[in-house]
Amino acid sequence: MREPTYFILAALQDEPRHGYAIITRVGELSQQRVALSTGTLYQALDRLARAELVEVVRDEVVNGRARRHYALTNDGHAALRAEAVRMAEAAKVVLRVRPA
Image 1 (cartoon, rainbow, N blue to C red):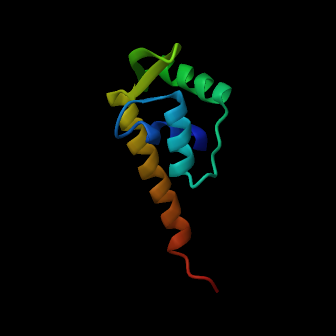
Image 2 (tube, rainbow, N blue to C red):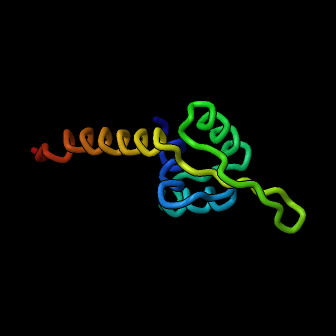
Image 3 (cartoon, one colour):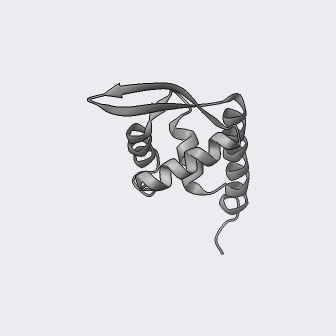
């Protein structure tokens, strides 16, 4: 899983969010290492929705603008958790080796 995808899923793990809130949360969680453009975010959300990892849970209009809220599906939660475990296991390989 690519880093932007991981952080998009992580941004949705605690509550549904709309696009701008996802971009903001991704920045916070990644300590600003991942900066998503709007186009990149929505391409990723479309791909994640097709893979049934995220779903649209609400549409609303705020100040005349459409706002779509996304949430993780059960499969999305499982994929995020599996990736976190995979990365933790990979980190152990490096962290348990003592420098010479």
